[in-house]
Every structure is written in structure tokens, then in C-alpha cells.
Image (cartoon, rainbow, N blue to C red; front, side, top):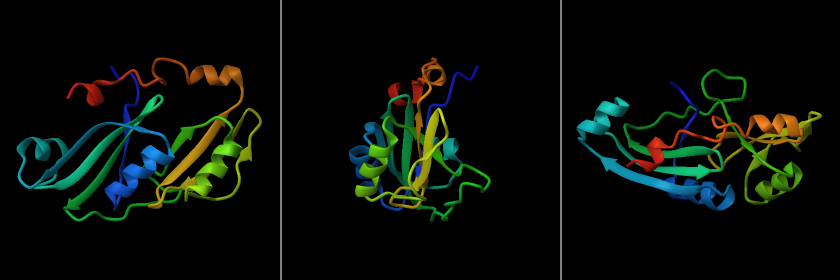
Length: 165
């Protein structure tokens, strides 16, 4: 039984810069980390790559986890996309006071397509982290709609990966 989404993985070209950005600027907490290089049967079986080299950090923020990866082997391809492309083109961070958060993130180096856009009971705008990955900031203003975000599935009830190792 699927009970919710645990994490979103993000590949980055500079692990330390990404870790600093996602923890110090976006406020995620590192709850796990790993590094591997070369022959590792378990890693190879799980991810389907031969003799990979990578650093990983699992980050928790509110009801979601982000898993940062910097692979050096095999050499990564740049898959950054536009919001309209197929695949996983963005993830959204729920915020309060979207105008203030937009200003704070701009000052911290994020770029946005413009100011937050009002949609009645919500507001949103897309931006990019320092590596070009698309991140939406999203504010829910309707109390009834906000209740959906407080269900067990939305709160990230699945915690096995981050806590059992």
C-alpha cells in the first residue's frame, strides 16, 4: 500500500553548495548522509549503475524530504527542464507569507520568473535554485484547502528510509 511520497531526489553539480543552500537558505534539516565510490554490490543492485561514485544527503523539511545527489561516476547528464517538459520538471515548497519568502529567497540568490501571482485562495511563483532546478513557492490561503495538507499522507507518514538506517 502506498501511503504517500517520501522524498524527491535532486542531482547537483556542487554537493557542498547545494547542502548549504537547502539547509541554510531553505531551512531543511539533514537527517542522513552517505558517500560511495567504486564496486558496491548493494548500491549497484539498488540504483542500477556500475561502480558509481556519489555523495548523498537526505534532508527533511516539514512534511517532505529532499534527497541531494552529486554523482561523479558515471558522468551526469544535464537534465534541467522547463515547467512544461516531461519528467519531473519541478517541486513546490509550501510557504507562509509568500511575498516575504520571495524577497528572502531573491536576496539569497534564487531567481524567479517574476513576483508571486495571486490565484484567489492561493499564490505561487516558479524560481530556480543555484543549479537551475525549478522550485515553486506556493502559499495556501483558504483554511479548508489547507486541511488537505494536514492529512497523514500529506504529512509524510512514510519515514522508513530516513530513520531505519
